[in-house]
Amino acid sequence: MMFDPGSSVRVKNDWPETRGPAHIRTPHYVRGMQGTVVRWLGAFPNPEDLAFARPAATRALYHVRFDQPAIWQEGRAGDELVVEIFEHWLEPA
Amino acid sequence: MTIVETDGEKLLTALRSVLAAKGIASPAEIAERIASTDSANPGQGARMVAKAWTDPAYRARMLEDGTKAAEELGIPMRGMPPLGVLEDSADVHNLIVCTLCSCYPRAVLGYPPFWYKSAGYRARAVRDPRGLLAEEWGTVLPDHVRLRVVDSTADYRWMVLPLRPAGTEGWDEQRLASIVREGDMIGVTIPRV
Amino acid sequence: MDKDTPRAHHDLGGAAKFMCEAVDTTPHGLTDFDKQVDAIRQILGAKQIMTVDELRRGIESIPEAEYHRLSYYRRWIRSITGILLQKGVITEAELRAALEAG
Image (tube, rainbow over all chains, first blue to last red; front, side, top):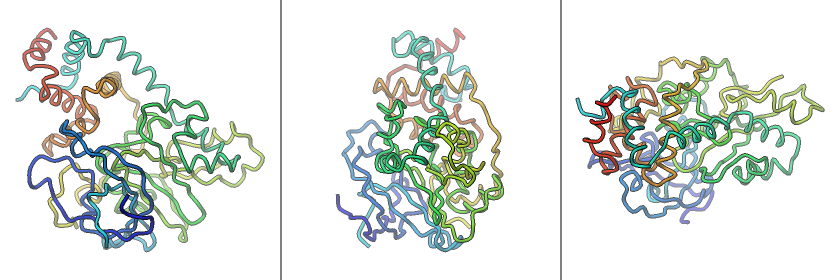
């Protein structure tokens, strides 16, 4: 587990879908965005590989909180989005 | 037209036949699975909520481990995805969505509702949740309440532990459970008497 | 205003074209068709023949217009059939024969 609760993280601004068939569970709207780790949720096999019946490495999963107005440039201050994101999509911010 | 573009009803009939012939899924297995899936319903989640409202120790256990808390009430959870419970408070209201597909806490609420799976819900819940709740459900949150939208993108399934409404003092668990609706445990509505 | 990104068409969070879409909040019971498709998916998962991830990948590969035109469980049956064919769990010949037998 790489990120403690409260850590500031950035979601990679990566688009594997543009490089070939892919199954990605990181929603478009958080890619490249900065958030805060709420907690570690456990470790699970990588769905990106399960989707193609490939051997799937177990990856740490985190609940990450994002400020809603920062994502959309609209919305109410204080509102937040919380998304389950796999460790390999996160970098320290 | 490729074979997978065949009308869905025809595909189902043909697939049933092929899967039965191969011993993969017999009509009896399918019927049995339908029956057991049908037994999951929002009343189960409502029982958990009612117990959490009356028993602080259960509430703590439910927030710590939703799967174990469901099993405590006899809800079958073996083989089910982990269940996470999000607690509403005086300051925070939770709303669940799956923008990528339709992930839903089926083990405790049953099949996801039509609206939960719709493009409109999936698009609007993360970007205009207050507008969505007000326009489609008449749910208006007080100004001081923050809205937390939880997008179910991976292995967990989420349900909301809503606030117990005023006017329910002294009610037993059964009576409390009777006012908890499916939408209350997703966050589109708020329980009321 | 959509963010300027190569968003996959199923990745609907905040998608501009659906921000004004009304939501039908009335109850819709599941049909026999729906329940059978759902049950088959569960059985295939329990027997480790097809995962929910493969189901999703199959659904996501449905072209955009069709994705939105098809009902929820029609997307599922199309995906399930496609994945089982791709994996060789069933063959196209077997499926055609069953379709013809009706």
